[in-house]
Image 1 (cartoon, rainbow over the protein chains, first blue to last red):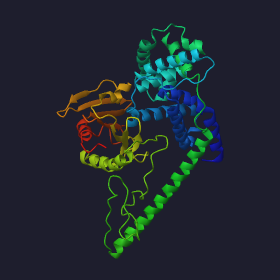
Image 2 (image 1 turned 90 degrees about the vertical axis):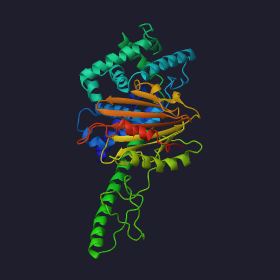
Image 3 (image 1 turned 90 degrees about the horizontal axis):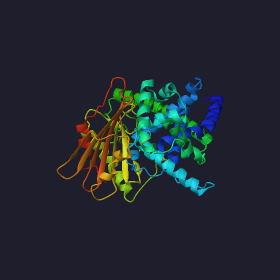
Image 4 (image 1 turned 180 degrees about the vertical axis):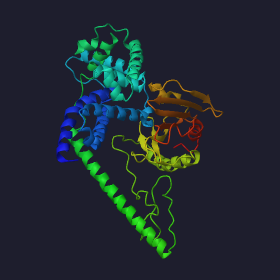
Length: 178
Length: 266
């Protein structure tokens, strides 16, 4: 890679590592694994940067690579063997108010318990559509599938999540905590 | 609206994000170093190949005895040094030169009492079992290198890439966390797998469960053997259709034969 390209990639990595990690965390539920996924993604992107840099959508490419890294990771037996008991993946640390912190931890546990019940690609659809605010077309592009598939997966995933989050009042506690 | 609630929950879940666990600059530097190293290795392999061709031509023309390929050759693709040690040129220049297998990657550390001996045994046994049961394919280790050890659940496993493919793997993992039949360790309990396609109890009291997934062309078939002594063998075929190869190249019966092979234990 030429020096100018490498510098551009460095800037890209600095700017997008954190947002990518947030998405990775919502996919996998573990900040440490999210770190690993983003590092793997950046390494893969580095190898293809000469091609990506010529497009006007490097972020879209990065998102797609991250999803692929995560789906590959899910297929590994040592990941599958981890017992999915719906436990809270991370402790809530610090925070100005312990009551708020505990409530946030409960909400997060409930969210990840719900996400654990749905298929990985459905979880990915939810993250892309409702965290990254992508359109159906953009989500389809990131997942490498049709828009119809995104719509049907979204509907199924939301129906499943509704049973978990359904009891909650419309003005969610999550918003109150922000 | 559930859509708004999902967005709220996602935002709340990442609100107390910890600092990045890595330095992006350092990752970029590492990626650059790795790329340069790979290029150097590729260049070296090419040079070795050229030397091999030259040596083979010389051997043929002088009528010397033909060298034999040592036990390191075969499906794993590594060549043993030639007898005598003076000339170590491989007879099949298309194969890479013998190199030391990579250590397990640093991001999946793990060991447990007895894991070193178990890894040493399984490193030999798994390829043997695969060679015997899967007669239509040969396997090489994928990028990951050596077997992986996972402390949680006392698990050892590896993914074996079908030679000549880029996305056709058989993954074999063996775990032994408890000393009795351990159905609670079924990884499908974590969600996303759907119900088993089949499950049955074998005469020895062990249980077999078969799961299948087909997502975006990526086919996956998993056979789990839960043994009465607590050992769980998980054999998993992941196949992405490639030019000239479509669908799973390995049947459920073959995966079952691997999973129930008594040699697959610690």
